[in-house]
Amino acid sequence: MAKAKLHHFFIHLAVWAIYIAFPAFVLPRPFSLLRQGDSFLTFHLTETILSIIFFYFNFSYAIPRFFFTKKYSLYFLSIVLILILLSLIFRWGLISFSPPPDMLKRPPQDMLIGGYIHRMMLVFVASFGLRFYMRNQQIEYASLKSELQSLKSQIQPHFLFNTLNNIYGQAISNSPTTADSIFKLSAIMRYVLTETDKDKVELARELEYIEHYIALQKIRLTSKTQVTFEVVGNWQAKEIAPLLLIGFIENAFKYGISTEFETEISIKIDIQINTLLFEVKNTKITTKADTASTHIGLTNIKKRLELLYKNNYVLDISETEKVFFVRLMLQL
View 1: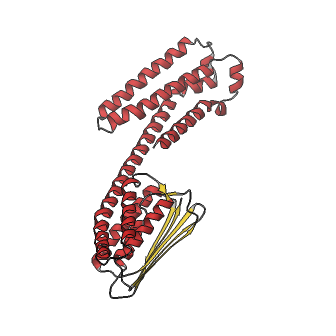
View 2: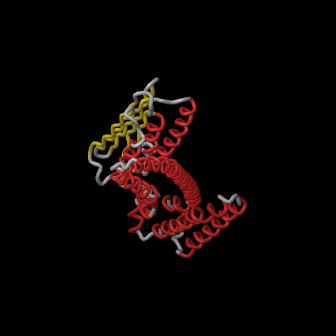
View 3: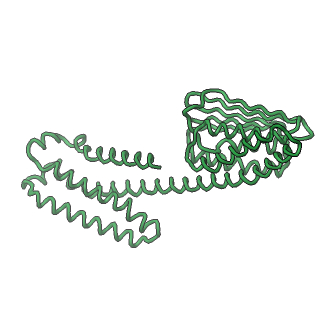
């Protein structure tokens, strides 16, 4: 969050720097005007300061306090009053600086003074557009956090109870893998509870979580289901959104195993320089109710991908009568 605020600060700083320097690129003879002792620079800087005041008054105060709370009358009244006040200040500045009598006749100054209202309109539109954009981003982010919390709440009780039952069965039979299963379950719960509140986590931690999850799922499988899990490439110093891939893997175990038929689940993750290729293939053992539930789960995953990665991913989901296949290419 601190990085995002710093990023926004530098963007604002750069935009205002360009705004201040803009006349040097559009006005004829800007440097010759300064050498002649004109008040052009002083007027331009004054107008810029007033524009900045108006921008942040609208952006940080008027829109959040009045417009977003549907107090439209107060909003438009506040905008009119601030514009009148700033215009009076600007006019007072012109008189105070005592420009030469022929200043208003010069084209560059005409562009400065005559364009004051137009610039304020531009600043108004910019502040309005940016505030709405940021509000939409905040809404999407809040929705994303809510979905992630929902995902965590689904994983914990459902997966926890099933795994505890499986570990209990191991303990009853004095299985030598009982302690290792408890360790993996503890690592999973610690990861879900402490790491997934972040926007991004280390890819290595996410892969470890997936590995533990698959290992615990294998406890309940019979010899009818074959599971392969492969990770290729260098995953060090890379990050990914937490719990992003697990939904596809959950679906594979939920709808791709059987105690009667031969089934197969294949999971492969290939990490290249800045790209992650994720593939899951499983035999289909489903009912109509299962299929409907799968579609709901996949819709939620697609929404998360769109919110988190926008145009930086390619998702391909296909199925035949017997096989369900997911292929995700993600820009890290």
